[in-house]
Image (tube, rainbow, N blue to C red):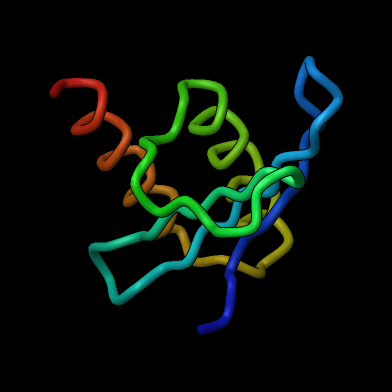
Length: 86
């Protein structure tokens, strides 16, 4: 499965954390995270508000470069609202 968007951040304890977002169809997206001190990917931990901020910023940049459709911006905003509402 091809990762559509991926980035790495350095946590306060010095460990790197990789975040991967894969879009599946028109209504779903899958979040995956992996810390450099762990062997397996985590598919279950919900994204943090900071993760949502980063994905919104990245998808907006990609949209303005013509590399992502506007429907992905709408999908991310919709899914974030649903996640924060629950």
